[in-house]
Length: 385
Image (cartoon, rainbow, N blue to C red; front, side, top):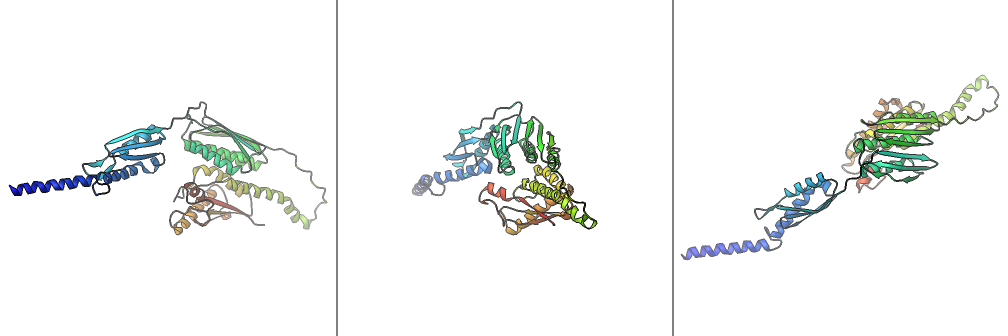
């Protein structure tokens, strides 16, 4: 009997020790320790995407969510992931038992625009926007490109966010950016989009610029149509100088002199087209952005019409990864652009490709926005005099 009583007493002591450990903060198996492990698991369940717009705390085994979800579907998916989170507390605190999502709101859906329009008017150094974009990311991309293409221009007006776009945001963005690149070639003009139709109209300084703008509008993403109505400035040419007829030995010099203005125009067109191009790449990828293909076709056409001219293409990367891998990746990106230009009609002997890796950043690699800017292509026009 005494042995039995001693056994019971021992078990009671062990139970008391275990119970005390459960309530002592920091002790292995304590409630506080189990809650911390469960909170770590719940935070991990947020993932990288939801972590940007939601947060989670634990009250025992109850998860408390807060933030603003981009949609009802995203909110529901997050609640389900957090509800499935598990900790290391065994039967006592093994997982989330309740999810309180009362503080997890949903962004209100934007109003639907009908018709869904987009307008950009360019004249006298002013670029004025109006109309709609399908989401914040697309609107930011349009504003960013406008600043790149028209750096010395007063950009005004407002693009509102609305539902009702005829295609997915990515396709709509490509069409809007292509239209802005076409507008870049005009002295004055406008982009006018309504529903699935994008149109550029205005006046170009010469036929080369007009042709580049028209070419850009010929290829739009599936589900969208591009149109152009571009006139050429018909200003009268300056009167020919009253020169004596050249003798036979002076013919070559005269020809060179007459070709100089045309060559200067050709080089200027190439430089303008190359400066307007913004080619970005996903991280660790060399896939060409489909939105840049039309601009590259226009550049190839200009290069084919400009003799004794070379185009040097240099690829750049962000600082993620090994330097040697980034050098290889930058060269791959430059070669992708070179190969596309050649396939679009640029003479192969006039286009070269090189890579600089991560060695020449133009933005801070500590931020995603900076890394995106650093993943780029640069062009240099070289004239053989």
